[in-house]
Length: 273
Image (cartoon, rainbow, N blue to C red; front, side, top):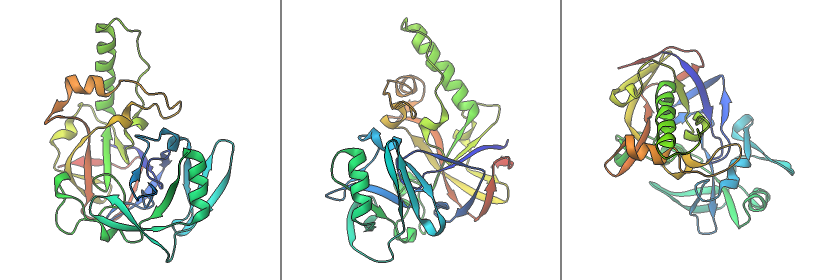
């Protein structure tokens, strides 16, 4: 089994950025989800409710900076605030993040169409992985929903696409286009022959870096947004609800927590344990 894709999301809920290699830090891949958008009250703003965020690319720059780009909009480079306003935020296990500044707020407000703010997590050790998602004492996470990394498998997506086609045929619908993995916003994708083998993993070694499987990943409405057109549909949740539903949730992929740090690359071997 090998790694076929690595991806980061420097600004939470914006377009995924594929990388050939990534540094694994205790709280996830370097550059992944240290920035987020919040509303005037500090509540999370994500592509679940504001799909326009998926038109935004947040390209990583040196020192944790971002260059924000979007169609028909001049780019904006934002540096991590060294100090500044502490913004109360609605993230589990986190009381505040640092405000990026008025220019960034105005840029993102134009994209979304309502007042929002850009915030930066200065120290991921301030945010613990929640026990509800398999977190253990001392484990940290950035502004990701649950754990430091998400892993998915190509064999599982292939099987899901077969199921989606069967669902459509059973309803007399035309054959759908295959779902792309970017809908699921993974950090790591691996190949392999057995669909959903990852359900039973407890650990994983990628190259020379070890990970703990904290939990399976429950899926939300964000997976129903086609990442290029932003069209919303019923899949994959409609089919996952038939094939992969238990405990009142639908499941695809697994959540990882680093046990060690180092560098991983596309093409690295991946060995489950």
